[in-house]
Structures are given as C-alpha cells and as structure tokens.
Length: 148
Image (cartoon, rainbow, N blue to C red; front, side, top):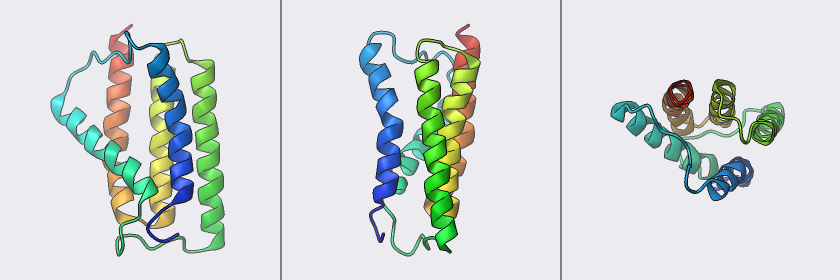
C-alpha cells in the first residue's frame, strides 16, 4: 500500500451506500438542514472531503504506514466493526429522524476516520478527522434536535 489504499476505498464505498440509497429514496425531502452556522459548515466540508480523499489516497511523506501487523489487523477489524454498526443503524433507523440516529451516524464514521489516521500514522488524515468529527457531530445533533 503506497499511495492508494484499497481498504480505505472499500470502507468509503460501504459507508456511502446507505447515504446514496437514502438520497435516492427521499429525493424531495433529503436531509433536513435547519441549523445554520456557516463557519462550522465550511469546516465540516473541508474535513469531510479531506477524510474521503485521504482514506483512499496517501500523500507521500505525510504518512508512515502501520507500525506492526497488529496495527493493520486493528485497522481492518476496527473499521469493519464501525462500518457494520453504521450500516446496521442505517437499516434499523432508516425512516426515523432521531437524535440517536443523528449522533450514531455522525460519531461512527468520525471514529473510523480518526482510527484510520492514527493507525496509518497519516498526519493529514488525522488532522482532517479532527476537523471533521466535532463539526459533523454538532451539525448532525443540532439538525436532529431542531427538527423535532
């Protein structure tokens, strides 16, 4: 695994699938964005696209790879469990707009990005995850809480 991370691509593809299905199913309604905070939204988008790209592409000289076989196993198992939980919560809560769903579906991928960045020893992925996670969780929580 040099510049391209096939495992990261797989994790991203699985995470995006329920989002795509939701968007196709609820074209008109989509996600209710009732809480508006331009700086937080901008930081979230920067972090989001950074995480998406850096899960798949490793920038030379900014990541150091797994420190051991155990770290690689933890990367696969940890992300596998997080992705499985993410899909399970999507399946169970597909139609329910709740604070639980909003928090779970924002915390789980955030943890996956952070876990990946730390275990890959990727400076930009870790930084993007640290930017994305709090912004995404705040936005998701506020939108769910205000849309009730």
